[in-house]
Length: 71
Image 1 (tube, helix red, strand yellow):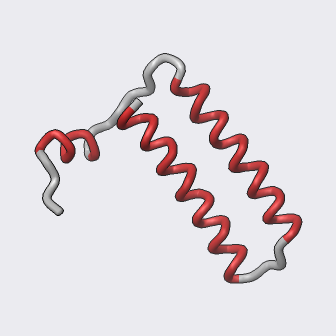
Image 2 (cartoon, one colour):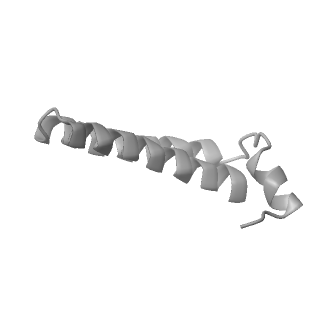
């Protein structure tokens, strides 16, 4: 899949937070932390729980990227 020049620029350019975006970043991280705490308390220490944490971090990253890039 080839990307347009505009999409390349959007993906590889720093996006300074716009007014109100920090509130969204904080809300997403707060909810993710709640889930991380539940996973930490409920799941045995294992490869699976490690992957759950990794994927939760990725979900936060991509949600924040959506806000930064498209918001």
